[in-house]
Length: 289
Image (cartoon, rainbow, N blue to C red; front, side, top):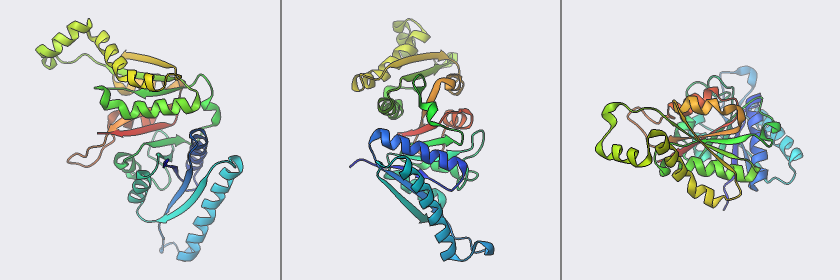
């Protein structure tokens, strides 16, 4: 069974942009769309009425948002839900059975709406499926020809398999080009070992070694998606800086994050954190082992 795309909405401009993005993506992928609002009763807000009144207002607002999507995409299978509960737990649970979770982001700061403060980062860090952040100003025109799906690749092929798969699937659905980016820096002298020196020597140096590593990581996805054009981009610098340097040509940026938890809890990683805060295009964060 194909998983639906889930869009979190809270009535903000950012979340409505995320909903519009999710609807277009669902149409392209031929999958269903689930519209979700996380609600919590606010008894201290007397002006907002009682539980039943507040819940009715919320449901009416969510249905209005869903109705707008149905009018634009009558062929789209769509359901709308209101769930009462903790923001993080509810959104993470919703992501678990979705193809992706799509949320609104204000950019250059924390995630917006019901994702206040650290809550947005917790959802991204703990979700088992890809989470896509969309800016309020995102428009369909940004998905026009010439705008690439940019994906970061690092480490061994399996380290970026999830991000590469997501990027190629998205590009195939849109008829877009994938730009696979691998950044590299000069390692400290103590990082060299006889084995690594031999590998570098066989590759002809550091940059040829990095180009070979990227080509090997991308190869299975080229074979699986032969109709998707690919640009392999290797550049010296920090991964975050290199990715942001090509963000101007991106209709979507895809980055990975480690799914394992640390002693201080789940984290999204410095590269994903930097791209989420500074890329102007939507950003997909894909977990990997």
